[in-house]
Length: 581
Image (cartoon, rainbow, N blue to C red; front, side, top):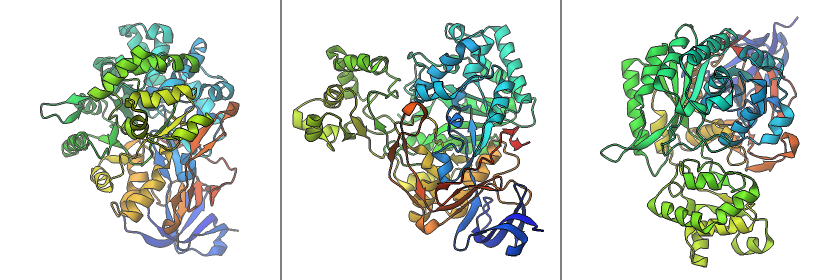
């Protein structure tokens, strides 16, 4: 009788703890790593030959928005294709539980705007058999899972439910009784296996308030008071495990003109009040505006020095936006653009053609806000990569907005919008990569509390492919630029997020832990080109990006992908309180 279900034989192990790589075999039994050492092939039912390959812990993605996608994609691709074996949902305080029956479609509408998740796939794939948070957790437990799933309590639906519904919660702040109801609902969720709570605080007056509700108003979580959040932190303190994920607003400069995060120290108060980790979103290595990042890193270093567990979720992947004005929603920080990108396609087309709006847009652009130098690139550098109208395509395809403006003697705003409107908003514009400096990324990842990720893997799926971040890190920052060692990269991709987010039984390759494992060919690992895939329910599409070089991906000891091919197995589990039950 075989001793092990599977042996991964002859690979170079990078175990995630920063221990130097070493060659050994891994024996797996009942989904766990039973032994690491020299093992004989005859001891296993199945042998995976890892000779010449890297064997490492599966990657842990803490900011995903896969809350809807998990209903039609058990592997949470793009992440599942790139070695991600565990994810957290409930990010930014958005989600689907608890929810009154009357509010279910209202919750879908919110996610369709603020995270740009197409509405129809959600409507046809999500049949609400839950209302309370414990019922939602049981609902997740019944789904076939190709990855492991950990769930934060999202603040927006929590408060809406406590106040009797979204309609009331959008009118006013919760009163004292409703706050206590929210606290009791949170305790109910924690007892059901949640791992903490998540929220977005993009203050309405902030220049970073880019993720609005479907009607252009702030999200419920955006306007809640400091006292409310400190009360929720105090509620988390009652539990041995848990963390807080906070997506926070940025503001303008200090006296030296350096971009600073608004009320960064509020994260400190939350960590101290809760007694648990706070994962702050986000760190961005924008090569043209480095000082805001350095201010964040200095603040994080101060937290480390004081022993306060605040972590920074870092956007490490080079993934430019591809936008069209039919779906685009990330100029919501500006009233003129926000209103112009709300409504039906025809309504948007009319508003984007309106001369008075154009005048305001040109003035704002010339003043430098909000579109000229927003975090993902400068608008004039965007290139027309897809145009539906044949005459427009022949004239403008593959030209930048700046080139078009010069050719047609137009303002940049008119250049991009005239073509978009004439093409019925079908034109696609590809932005530049603005975070491609490996040394700035090295500086960011030198922070002891910087966690790579911020994939938004289930969100903004028509605009970008951030879910490729593990592959981009291993190829670009490790193999090609040597900005990080292989050992450091795997510590950041698995062990550090597991520690910060309270994953108790996985994240490193050690005996007794879950066998979430990636086996890959580092010299031949590569990202494949971005594609458009019509693989969503209701015939909807998204942008995808696959990889070559991942030879085997295992979740709880079972192979889910082999050489990029899905094996059809769904061995993942709901991680209640951060561990498999």
